[in-house]
Structure formats: C-alpha cells, structure tokens
Image 1 (tube, rainbow, N blue to C red):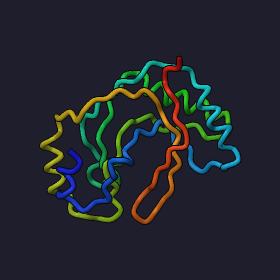
Image 2: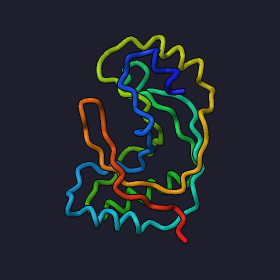
Image 3: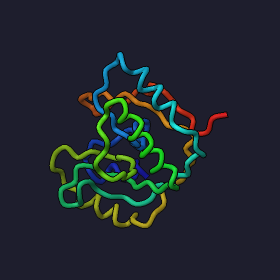
Image 4: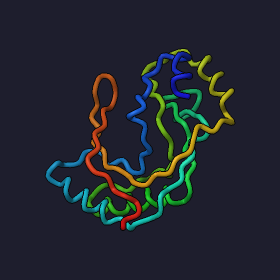
Amino acid sequence: MLSGLRPYARLNWSPAENLHITTKFIGEWPEPRLDAMVAALRSLPPRPPIGIALRGLGWFPNVHAPKIFWVGVEADGGLAELARHTDETVARLGVPLERRPFSPHLTLARIREKVPLARLQEAVAALAAEDFGEFTAGSFHLFLSKTAPSGSVYSKLAEFPLARS
C-alpha cells in the first residue's frame, strides 16, 4: 500500500522499518537514568497480546494544512490500556503526563514544505474504506529516536513481552 502511494506526492515517506505505534513519547531522557526507565516499563502488569488492525488514512492536523499522513490503528482495549499504564508509570519518574487523547496511528509520511497533494488525496479517497492488514502485538519496545537530515533514526533499546511466563 505505501509503495503504491509514494508516486503521488513528494513527501518525506517513512521507511517501513520506522513504522511504529507510539504509546508514550518520553522526550529527552538522561542516559544515566535509562536503567530506571527500563525497570519502570518492566513493572507494567502482564496483559494478553493485543490485536491490531490498520484501517483508514488521514492527515494531522487536518487535510487543509497537513503535516502528517497516517494510517489509522484500531485495536482492542488493551492498546489504550497499555498507553495509559505506560503514561502513569513513567510519570512517576518525572515524565509529564500526556494531555492529548490517545490516537494510535502509523505515520506514513511527514510534510515539511508545501507540495501538491491533489493526486495523493484522490488516491487516498479511493482507498478510504480499505483494510490494510491485521496483526497481533506480543510485546512493546523502548526506542531511542535521533533526528537526522533524512528523518528520524530509531534504535530499539529494550523489548517488553506483554504476557510473561
């Protein structure tokens, strides 16, 4: 799906390996306190794997002044619960609580400068009712994000299984 949309607009398209669902953006975190962050995330209660479906395409903040092109994420209540528990847990370490409602999505592209989007918007309208796949998440991860001229580069720092045996 992503490769089929790329020719319609010159955007900063996300590489497939960068696609992820953010449950909590932590921001700047001191490296000496990384072990405390990992320990806090390991303390989250076990939960069943989370069923996730990719449905719908859209724009943040809106179609008239887009900055982000995304595919929607529909999940059972476990994803929102994981986001809420993560937010509450890392808040005890000093990370500010999230004020915005949880809006799970995959960022497909970033729009840094004004480009013609009419052809892409037509293609998106034709795909509005499409399902783009389903999967089950059995774990979540802590990533380090570094900004580079070509876009963000993500490094996995830790993995946390949802159900522990």
